[in-house]
Length: 240
Length: 240
Image (spheres, each protein chain N blue to C red):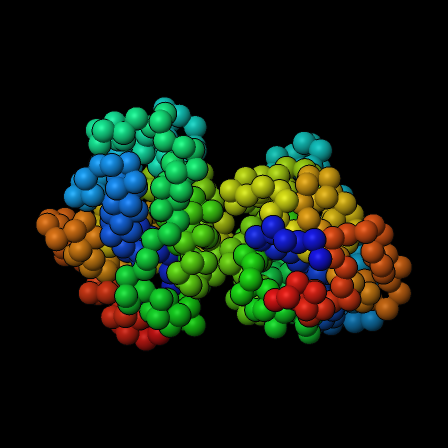
């Protein structure tokens, strides 16, 4: 595998490291039940919430609004979707909204994640390069025992992926050449942007990220520097 | 000990967590010897280099120059002191200057540091709040097995201690109230600035930070929330 000079593995987090959808569905089900709504709507609730994720970041990426951390965008998006589920945000106590919003801080890792990260950490610097803000990724890591060497990502570099600045400024912060970094992600588009900036790329397949009907990112769409079915196999392939 | 609501311990690094002077003296000695200068000058070299540390940051703190990371300031300061030791920076190969500058990335922890951090990490979020830049603190941690949960500090918040922004923006990044944070430092001035921002404070004594003739920070100068002879004792005091 052509990762000989790579010193740091940078990880996409939502979908690649943690199973965001199961966690958000569970949190949404509890919230909906508490508000007398059908818990069967929870998957739709999670998908609706996530559907606003990229458009919200796009306003920052395009320069329409200054950088704000993802917790803020998640909260705005949450309030935006509640009426469609029959709930007026103004009627919900603040602590309930903030607790639900922080469900993104309490996501569980995929079963292979923690053991594989511990192996990879012996050989590489490992750090998230996520659009999640520092507190979100740190709280998630503390709860789930994700053994990051540092918390990097959008908030550190004040730029959201897939803007080139998100990758290039991370290399600058690390004091490394871009080809000393490898992005690990379950998303071909993220890898394509990283490759465009000169990073090495590793695809891991997460066919259940979007639930049982997933149609995207079921396979590597380019010859990435590494392709593996999960993080355990990636650690094997990298000799970690 | 009145740290009941503290969720995160933030650590000063140079002097508190690592023994910067011994490491810089050793690196300076090797460099001086290689350039035909007396290795007996190494302690003076280390002290001269460190003497420019605070004045260089002051230009950023005062707004005279925009934020630049500490690696850049260290390098400027290194080139500034070399002539006093009979060495013209322009005659030294770039790789030697950058290697010497990165001696700050390769400092050893005090003997009690690693075991105490591992204990404290079980109960608190632990992170550096150092003026060192991310790569410096990360490389140091990787080499010395400092088990940080995240790398915070000046570069993340674009402000050098003891400016209030360094403490206040760190609380904001963590999504915590300032009284949920405790600064751990061997320097009374750092603790005073943190207390002024509402943080809790813990003093640990490092009587050899500046070598055998140290005259400063030999004792707590205010009734800090905790005072301990070293990090082991601090972990004991905090029940970690």
